[in-house]
Image (cartoon, rainbow, N blue to C red; front, side, top):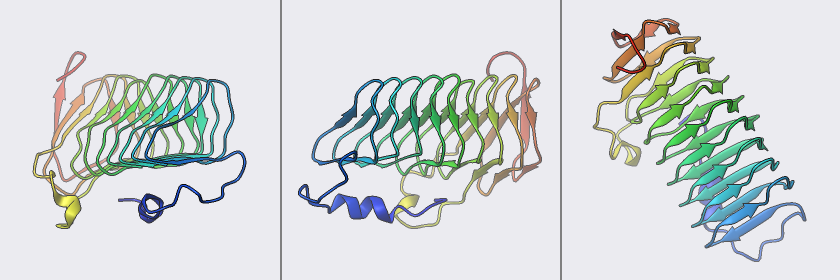
Length: 218
């Protein structure tokens, strides 16, 4: 992965009695929520979801064995999870990184990730959304949907043979939709299927041959 997940695994062994700052939210064995329009610091849990409701603002949000769900018009500095998906609502903004190990990533229309977006397994889907720091996976499908924009390129890494290799035998399917723009290299270290709309704009392609398509999808 682009960044180590050591902090999340340490969190998994945290005790519920650990002292935290007054504006932080931390829990073990249960979901946590930041209400609509509210502000919080770091939000974390183990064995539960993190839910950031519409218009809320948080610093980091992370969990182990749970999803991170961000509503519309919300803001966070970073989102991460192990064994769970991440969804970012309409016109919401992540000013840093977004990463998960085993889980899907979905960006709704108008959503933006300023930093790097990455996972190991799980589909990555951008729907008229923006990622400024590049997209990375090992075994996940990637859909850069219509009118989405990615700067920093796309990287599909070769499985490293460790425990992250589990489930990565499937050939990833990469789709660049109509009106989408990918700046930077599309770098494939393993076999993929790559479909690029005849109305998309992409950078150099390394390690794969693009199949052009017309219409909304291949």
